Length: 124
Image 1: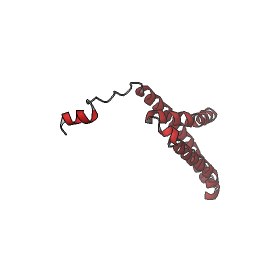
Image 2 (image 1 turned 120 degrees about the horizontal axis):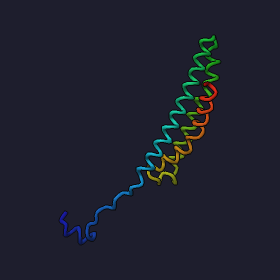
Image 3 (image 1 turned 90 degrees about the vertical axis):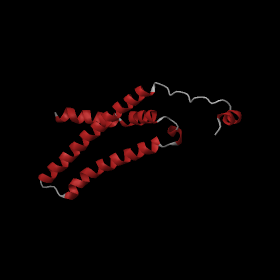
Image 4 (image 1 turned 45 degrees about the vertical axis):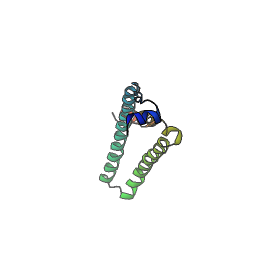
């Protein structure tokens, strides 16, 4: 398109505004929260898996082991589904992706981190 025609139709061309510089801190904080959350969930999953393995080695049946592991797996899946539904809620979808990750990380972090710390202290 001819630049003069564009200027007549839409006014003078203006560069897009620059992005704000505060996004890096939010992104780093969200990454730290999610790293803590995933490390805690990994530790808890390791403990549940080891308990199941020890149960099988001790002679428990698969049904007894699955009765112990199934509630943990369903809890993790339910929490993941709730956080996903929250992240895509209309009011929260308007946030920037780093802010959305920070919000969901702040909601997801406390429970697994406290449980992992508790099990870490008790297992030595």
